[in-house]
Image 1 (cartoon, rainbow, N blue to C red):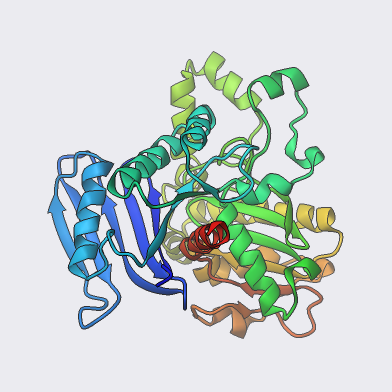
Image 2 (image 1 turned 90 degrees about the horizontal axis):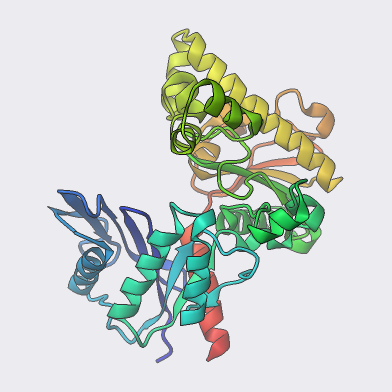
Length: 405
């Protein structure tokens, strides 16, 4: 029997998300989340998706001291459903790794050398890569015989030309410290750009797409013929669009000003820009549904936060229209992009000269399916394309291990 199952692990600093998929039909067999790893009380929520218990969540509140304990508990839950990690049907474990630098432009089977390189990239991804490494090492200990495949958030963006990836700073300094634009959310941008081309009935090589991944973290990309040519996030996920708690684009001199005038340390400024800015900093709320509710009640601060958020979105749509020259589609995805109709409408209002418009009726429809929400006369298709980063990771891992057989 040829193994066809892929376990996808997304290890955060204190969390572990997982999905088990069968790549024969892309079906999900189980999924779950472990939260608050290392805290006094952790929580494991496991959902089997097969058999008579399909869809019935099992919640366990206990303490998981580390990712090793968490993953062992996940393995027990999977085994209880007949889906244990010792199954011969498991082909590989796919790991989301946030930063792959320039070296990793494709999914990669983890070796000691690969792990060492991921560790060397910790200074440019201090919040993410250490947790990703922990997840890989834990999975290796449980199944040392199984391929562990790293799928990098940055990989899709390695096709950016140098003039898009380089910052205009001293070249020697930049090279010595790996300072350049890497981009993130790459698995989502790859998945959505291909799905958008399919929605238009074309091959990805024939389509130019602007992808707007709008969640608590948010990023835009310009994809020409299936290849990323520009993206909004940079050295870190802080650059670009206004996000839930991140500032996005900012005059770098703000940092020096806060050091000199406010007496803030680099750590305090880092916390400010990453955790206390964006929508939270502007109106105290990062849930777009709550912001819209407050706007409807006449809250001027929420209204201003929304206008700033939309203004930045429009700037990137316009900029990437210029970068691409010809745009076939603008695709909205992720939590806000897929569900917030007012955001989609506001983002393209006034951009009719760029060929953009939304149909109010189509835009108001709620669906889990990819769909076009622009009127027939629009020169550029506006689409809502649900992202599926876990499926993308599973695809890449599965294709890699099949090729190596």
